Image 1 (tube, helix red, strand yellow):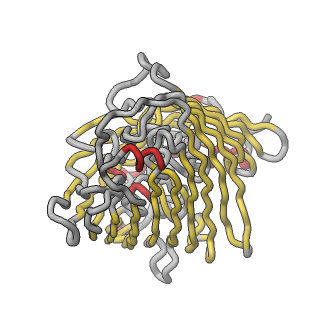
Image 2 (image 1 turned 90 degrees about the vertical axis):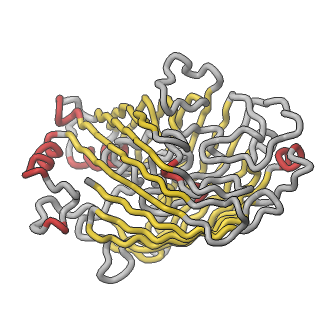
Image 3 (image 1 turned 120 degrees about the vertical axis):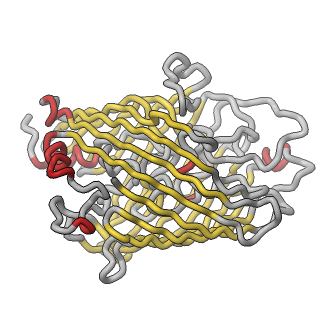
Length: 451
C-alpha cells in the first residue's frame, strides 16, 4: 500500500496519541498530537511560526535555528523541544500556614520518525526527560495540587528522570485513510490535552490539577508508568481506544522488574468529533478499572490527603471510573500555519467508585480561547470552575473530621512576548475539602521559554 499524503495526516494525528494521561478527551488522555514538540504541551498547533523567520524575535526558539541545522534535522526525521517552565504562587487570602512557592522544570522532548531515518514507515519513537526543582504552594485542607507541571517526576525536591520512552506503529488499512495505532513503553501521565482550551500538563493553559486531569483518575492511572495501547484512527482522529497500564507508578525507576506485580489498569474510550453550528468540537466517554487494591486514603498523583483515618480501612480491588468530556468552539478560524484558533467551552462529568476513591462525582466547566483577540494570534486565556465531590466512604471513614466538596475557580491570561516566550498571569480561588479550612486566594505567574 502506498503511503501518501492521506497517510501523513493519519500519522500526524496518531503518533504519540498512545501516550496515556491522567485524563484527556480521547479517553483518559490519549491525545491526538505529535510525540515531539506538541506532546508535552498537548496542543497540536504549538504556536510555531514558519521556519526561517527573518527576525530573531519572530523565530520559533530562543536558541534560533542553529544555522539551519535544526530544520535539516527535522526534515530528516528528528525533532527536539527544550522547554523551561517556571512559576510562583503567593497566598494572599486564607489562614496562616498556607504558603506560596517558586518552582520550575526543564523538559526535553525528542521524537524520531523512523520512516525518514531508517525507512520504517509508520514507526515513531518518543524520549522525554524532566528535571524539576522548587516547591508547590501548600494549601491547608485541600486535596488537589494548584501546580500541575511540578507533580512529575515527583512532587518534591530536585529530581531528574526519563518520564517517557515509547514506540508507536501506524498501520493504515482500507481506502478511507483509516489506521490502527499500536504503542508500548513508558508514558508520562500529563502528556496531552483535554481540549484546545485546557490540559497539557500545566505548561500553557491552566495551572491547577483539576483542569489538567480529572480528579477521579490519578489513583488508577499513575503519572509515570509502563503499558501498551491500541487505537482505531478514523479521519485523522482516534475513534476507539484501549490501553493497559501498570497500576503502580515508577517515576524514577524503570518499573520493568515489577511490571504488573501489584495490579493492572484497563482503559477504554470512544470519541465523537462534532460540528455544531458549523464549529469544531468533540465528545468522549471513557471507562477504566484496576485490579490494584486501594482505600479512599491512598493519595494519587497530585492528591494530598487532608486527613488520616483513625483506623486504616481494608484495601479493596476493582476501583473504577467513568467519565464524559467535551469541548466546543463558539468561534474559530484557520491561522496562517493551518492550525485552528478561536474560543469555546469545555467540560467534564466523572463518577468514581465510592468504596476506594476520595472523589465521588466531579463536574468541571470552563471557557477558553487561543488567538481570539485581534492582533494577538498566540495569546491564550481561560476561566474554569470545578467541584470535586467527596465519596461516601471517604466522608464516613474520615470522621470525626468533616469533609465537603472541594471547589476551585481559576482564570489565566498568557501573553506571547515572542513565539518562544509565554508570560502568564494566573488567579486561583480554592475552597478546601476539609471543613473549617479557610478559602484561599492564590495569584501566580508563569514563564515558559522554548529553547
